[in-house]
Amino acid sequence: MIDMAARALLALGCFVGVGAALMLLGTAGGTPERLVSWIALVLGLAAIVASATVLRIRIVRRLRESDPSDPDDEDVIHTKEES
Image 1 (cartoon, rainbow, N blue to C red):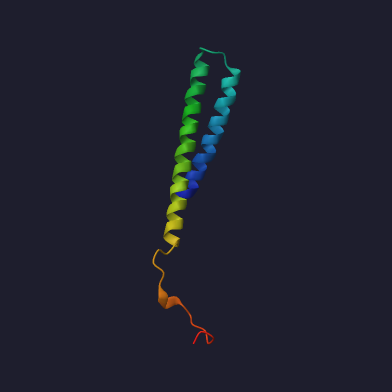
Image 2 (cartoon, rainbow, N blue to C red; image 1 turned 45 degrees about the horizontal axis):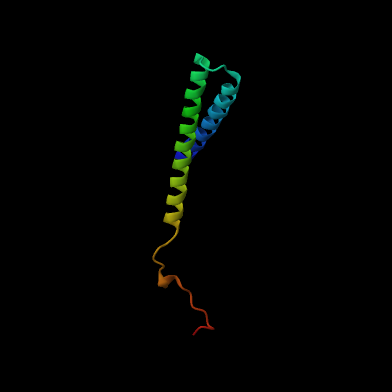
């Protein structure tokens, strides 16, 4: 569930960030519209970084849990050729 929320936040951050970057190109300097575009760009980038960090932590944790650090020798199946 956290993965789905992080992916949704990543998509939203990309949408807001790209929209704000395009708005920066179309607004005149020193106007309130330019200020709002900068704020939206910062918030979009923050959402992208936060969601990417959460996804990265979840992936690393999942890989760490699936990799046994202490292999168990009892799971070895001996064949007739080895005996």
